[in-house]
Image 1 (tube, rainbow, N blue to C red):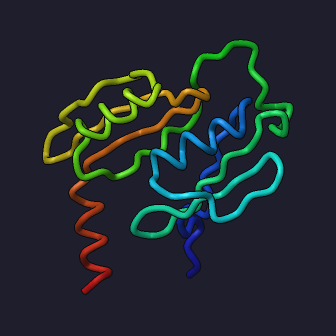
Image 2: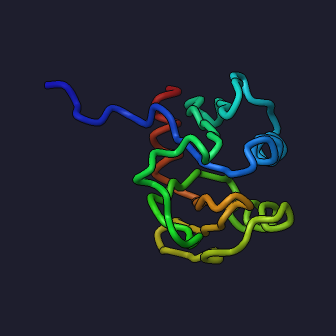
Length: 138
């Protein structure tokens, strides 16, 4: 039986100031986009080389247009080794706190911020992520 959802192919972020968003994420990620064209850039990051795309919001489907600027949508949590340190780093880069670091029990810690372009960025220390990563490496 084929799995219905096999994994994240691309995470797409939107930004009205596309060039500023690409520069901001390049600094945060410590790498340049590996693919760029006008209005779109892609990064490969993390242990699984997940693709993160940044699209100029002028290309957003009309159904995604919102009358207000309240952050909404799916929260993608990225595993980080130190939630508090990464939380402070993104705040120092201009992100705003949505939810400060929270101990969720059993080793899970989460936090969320809104990047300077209105996207929600989730940070998480997740022991299950490490277990899966380490089992694949063995």
